[in-house]
Length: 375
Ligand code: UD1
Image: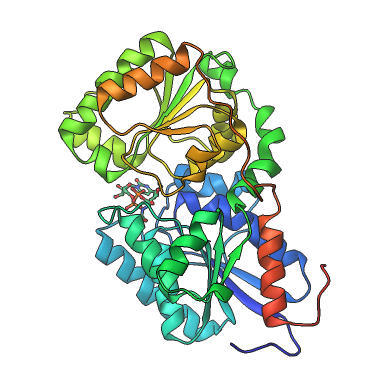
């Protein structure tokens, strides 16, 4: 890889879907604060609604993207292919020194693949996570992105173990912590000042939060119906707020004849409002990846409605329990929490709000050895 002489290291940061935005925000801020870097942001347009995209830019203070590829929704092949095609054009024009990708969405893989074929270095933030479940589209995106990345930034020790087993050279792997937690720490105080609880008539600790959007849960009518039934039961004891993801909204329409579950339904919430809800929830039920991490740091009990997790540290050290999708197990585990049974958690190593700083330190050493020093 080329070591840079004079002139800033040109980084193209890529974000496409909702879970990317809270990861890219601290990275972009850190890169732009350092003299040795010139960072530009491209939005692939994988998510495009105000509620799924624009509101996150606003809440997180992310500047307008320098380019928007406007790919939108579609089947996986077409969506991934469109990002690949459009970002290749952009990369050929811009010729950055590094493409920075985060997470495991289709945009992550497509951008990494376009870059590596043009001989541009790739950094993957949140590398090495593995659910072991190849029916998950994100698992395929993670495996492939990691194989073609030059810098692999991991959030937890399991990351390096997986990567080494898959033949990634140790010198490419850097355990830096969790950029998503950088964002959480930067914004928690502000989130706590919002009136979303009052607006929804909720009291701290006396409500649950549900998110559900994995294809394995929502695209299968019988599974979705069974999940909603047990969640409605839990809702009788603890009101459950359910911001409904667009995919799930469509699934309710298509598979359940538009019959919404008897929970407290809301539109998808912005980053700050959702963070406020999480921080004050008595129980969180989710099939998201990032929420398992956020609840771990917030010390809120989390039941993961999946058969596996790619984030084992949230179970080993945090407040997460992987309960699967069997209604009897979900009911039993939720009742334990409602009856006061709590596993004390601790915050994992390096989830301290400084992950972006460590990442840019590594890049600085690689591209501008000897320049050292921050800012
Ligand atoms: C994607 C990511 C997933 C991430 C999730 C967070 C992949 C493979 N999956 O899944 O890892 O957890 O985002 O939301 O990249 N839609 C809208 N407005 C939008 C975006 C989507 O209405 O702004 C609707 C469309 O009907 C679309 C559906 O939601 O077909 C699914 O969107 P898509 O981006 O394909 O996948 P997600 O399920 O959101």
